[in-house]
Length: 284
Length: 138
Length: 138
Image (cartoon, rainbow over the protein chains, first blue to last red):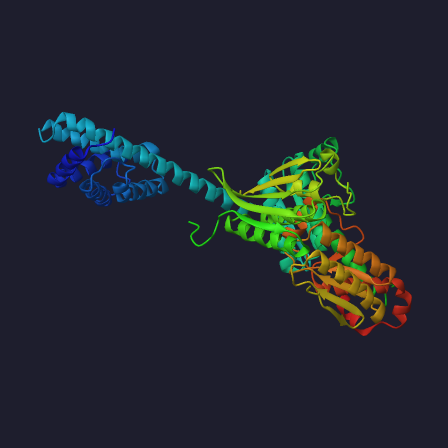
């Protein structure tokens, strides 16, 4: 599969000799497939870059895309496919960006500049370059998805201070184990940062609760207690109440309230009674 | 990627109280190096503390060996606690919450198991005990 | 062996644990505190564990024991400053802090101790309110 030193030498010679024509045609073919989503000038620059790295790598004997001398070429390919993946180009479009080089080679063969046999050999290399690009593309997209998932977690778990000494987490959407964990840590940290002894976990916006999620909420409440804070759960829907009972989950002595407003009133009453107890005119 | 961080296996003898503290510190260093989350670090160090104390109190001393493991997708920390003590006659019972022969809370083994991802006990009466725990990064 | 200092502030003893304690150090602290409570006639003990990055079952038991001892000696114990990761780990470990009062920070801990003394005689206090307390409540 790998190119011999001789073959790679011929490829470099070919690319160097017809540099202008190769770059021009390569850019044109790619441009056609992208239908103008990348300017001709930009495309030309990128193709030129690849073209140059191929020649540089080939000068040291471009046996294979995985070989040591191809380090720079791999970097150039990776940069190209990362860039395209970020700009939302499809995997096919990215791969075609490279496979266009094969068309250029065939055109060169048609005009008798290169042996057909060599075209086939070179095609093998281009294929492997394409596959490499594809892999980088997938990695980039996976990275993007992971980043977005994390951002989503951040977005969807706000912990807000709603009163002096009272913080609330309004949970919206499906709670999976990972998110429940993030919420738990975020809430507990906020209790410390704000010195708030009261927390309200509002689950009005949570459509369903399974055993694991219920366990996470319970653990949060217990952990908050260990730290010296009190948790109230509000907004339990009828279906969720049924699930909790059906699953046999013990909510024990954890305070639950119908709505966030009720929960806040409850907290204010506790602290209010506390304050009132020390007020001289409490019998009034 | 991890230039400057030594990830080679490290061993710590457990022969005294202070050694339990040293095991905790060693595990913490490695857990930070493989980038476990703060909660996971805390869980692993706590489990290590329980198991190191078991090695000292029940096994009459031994060693803890900390290694970095890699399954291709993620990295983790593996700790092996080994002693040549009396062994555990009834493992099921020893893993029960609240069961203790040493006057503790009986949460050492069973609690440590809940704090890690993988937990394995290899014990033979009269020969000793080997507890292997692993925590993976997420 | 290192010792954890016990500070006296008014009628409260403040212990701020700043080191990774060995089991012996923890036991010594337990004894020191019992002595100091009697010696000073303290009404409250605040144990600040803000600096502790783990609490295992041994330290958990020490805290419980201190709370029980101080109760016998008519002093209220409040453990303050537990880190979130530590709390999450303790829940997983299965350690319940039964009988231990906790607060987010030293200030809240002092309020708790002050409030528990109020409970003893609210009526007397109405006749003779202590100056600082009326102000904090409103």
